[in-house]
Image (tube, rainbow, N blue to C red; front, side):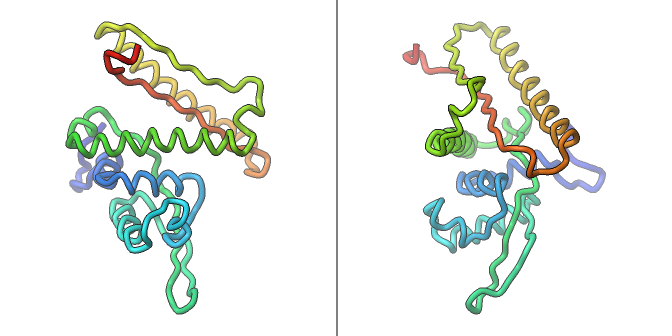
Length: 195
């Protein structure tokens, strides 16, 4: 990964790391990666005050992670709808530059998103709709080499899954003929008592 371009502009991963300096932004970006929305449309589902949402949306826009796609006048105010322009992907180098509190906030928001998506799928009846759906929790006992190998497998799986998504879009260009799916990949060190 190049850390800076010739123009000294931060890479997308660095922009993402800076933009995600607050967990609220991770929650906003999670929703916007699924569908466009305005700050007022996110107020109720996220349980965050409109003024805070507007502030964090401006920060996400500043770092190039969201963009406005529509503005309209609603009861004397301007309502701006945004969409996400980036997916979450931080390199190990970017991650190492973040302080512990920021890393924890991003991790918390990412895991919360995983649980939220799964819960909505269960509640909506889609989680178990396919017989070939998967839920795998492996409790591993690893050494350092084993950990590095598992970590690389997760990175490779992400790349392969993203490639499959692109192939599906090329194979079936009409979005109405495709459906939404979620693949969650987690690998982390468990606390000693987790078993």
